[in-house]
Amino acid sequence: MESIGANVKRLRRQRGLTQTQLAEQLLAQPMGWQWSQMSISRLENGNDITVSQLEALAAVLGREVLANTRIGTFMSDDFAYLQQQSRLHELSERAHKALADAKATTASLQAIVDQVGDGHGEHTEAT
Picture 1: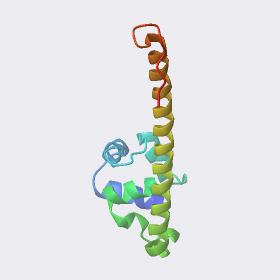
Picture 2 (picture 1 turned 45 degrees about the vertical axis):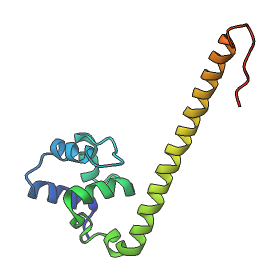
Picture 3 (picture 1 turned 180 degrees about the vertical axis):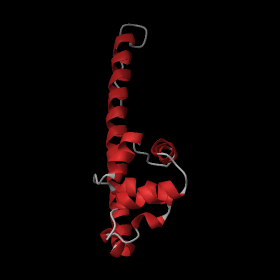
Picture 4 (picture 1 turned 120 degrees about the vertical axis):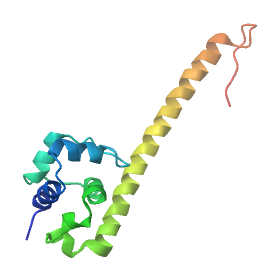
């Protein structure tokens, strides 16, 4: 059995890429992760990987990144499910942040409205 890190290293070298060049290509992937030469090095040396990171690697290096790995043996349905769950979690986090930002903006705008009033010193209620 190969590790994903060993496959990444092999595929990266086959394509004539440095770790930095691979990181730059990975940064261009949607739902990006903060790739760097250091993160590629750590991955190649056996650090854990998330589903989102694996997705990005597969987009750049191809599905061969899973060749002869334990994860490659259950990839089809299980991997698709893990991808979906990872995306849902990421989207949920973004939605919660957007909601918090919207609430903060609303509170700021309400404070301005309360300060300005309607020009006659009266305060306007927001609906």
